[in-house]
Each structure stands twice: as C-alpha cells, then as structure tokens.
Length: 129
Ligand SMILES: Cc1cc2nc3c(=O)[nH]c(=O)nc-3n(C[C@H](O)[C@H](O)[C@H](O)COP(=O)(O)O)c2cc1C
Image (tube, rainbow, N blue to C red; front, side, top):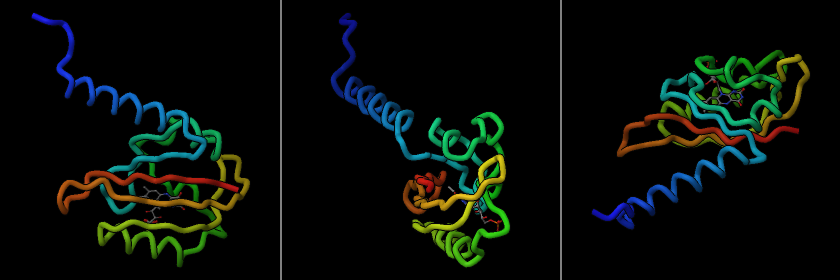
C-alpha cells in the first residue's frame, strides 16, 4: 500500500496548515467564541495578548466583555448584539481597555461561522490604536 496521502487529503492538510500559519502569525488579534450572544472565548491568538495584555489561558471561557469599561459605547455594543441575534456580521469601533486598565480604540469585525442557518461560533478580527 502506498504511504502517500490521496491528493484530496493532502490538499485538506495543506489548507489547514495555511490557515493555522495565517491565524497564528496575524498582526491582527483574532478571537473565536462559542455561538452564545455574549460569546465565550474558545480561541485567541498571540496578537490578542499583544493588544490587550491578557494571556490566552486567562481569557478562555470568559467573554470579550472583559475589554469593556466606562467609555465603551453602549450603542455600538447594542448594534453588535443585534447582528449576533440575526446571525449576521458586524463592524465597528469603540473604546476598550487593556488588562492594565489603559484605554484604546478597538476596531473590529465579528463574523458568524455557519453551517446552513446554524451559527457554530463567532470569529472576531480586532485591531487597536
Ligand atoms: C466574537 C465576539 C467578539 C467580541 N469582541 C468584542 C470586543 O472586541 N470589544 C467589546 O467591547 N465587545 C466585544 N464583544 C461583545 C461582548 O462579548 C458581548 O457580546 C456584548 O458585550 C453583549 O453582551 P452583554 O449585553 O451581556 O454585555 C464581542 C462579542 C463576540 C461574540
């Protein structure tokens, strides 16, 4: 029996490897949450730690609400919640806070990972100033 993977499997492996390299090395912070409206974090890349000061281990199971504070605009968060309820995507900016309490402007997108109409998870791409 040949030890070579069939070409379709090789293709899948290569695609997976490419995505892994992209997500792990992105300059943008990438968060993946479960499909709930608050979004419990199930994955964060190193750029998230660089942006926010939170280690990956300490945010798994929490929600991105940890980034919010006094100056976070409710209007923007309400718009995000509306998009999540509809299974749609969101783009916006607001004030968020690092672990040390310092504020920054968060620019971010949230997109559903869907199979048919069912949302399995949310993915956020975040950039801070
Ligand atoms: C994938 C994803 C990413 C999110 N990223 C942020 C973020 O970067 N900053 C922020 O203020 N809120 C973010 N949120 C919003 C909060 O997690 C939460 O959905 C929002 O505060 C509404 O829930 P609440 O009404 O219980 O606070 C994100 C939500 C999801 C699902």
